Amino acid sequence: MMLEIPDVLSAEQLQQCRTALEAGNWQDGRLTAGHQAVNVKANQQLAQDDPLTQQLGDFILARLAQHPRFMAAALPLKVVPPRFNRYAEGGTYGDHIDNAVFSVPGTPHRIRADLSATLFFSEPEEYEGGELVVQDKRVKLPAGHLVLYSSGSLHRVEPVTRGARLASFFWVQSLVRQDDQRSVLLELDDSIQALRQQVPDSPELVRLTGIYHNLLRQWTQT
Image 1 (tube, rainbow, N blue to C red):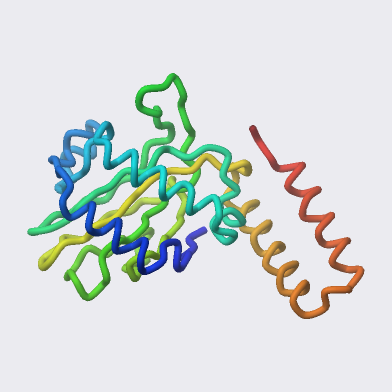
Image 2 (image 1 turned 120 degrees about the vertical axis):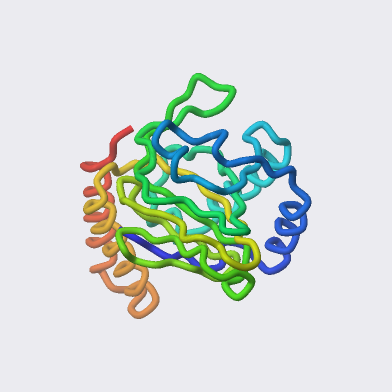
């Protein structure tokens, strides 16, 4: 499943984040790369213990918790605290697959990565290149929009040849581990929401909602 989620941030919220990120203390992204990724990763990141990382990460998580589309698609159980990267002057990240499990800094907790997410802070026209390529599908979204995709997908970030690409990225452990099951639940939820708008008094809404929750009950893993 790959899903584009628009308008995670408002224009005002986006500008506040951009201002903070542009003044951030960016470090070599290879400092957080694994043994294989270090050979294909050439970008900048905020340190995970940087107060700005925690401040903006907490803000993003609060926004996502209030975003119905994200909640319906991801069905999040746990989320790795958001991180932030910057690509400029040829910055790139070659083909790789995300780790299966991430440790939460400063805690004993470990989170399985079912879904990967990128939240864009730069407008597409502000930089050249920098497309997120997931299984040969190219993604370059407006600022404030988010893309959600399977963490098991082969993906890369194309070189940025002009300007700078700012983004946040993080991983989600979903209540429903299987991608195809999440897709079925999202399609069913979309149908329920559409019916609720068209025929709010339909008795079929009760039946379909019950089917949704019974499938969720059957497929949930905690």
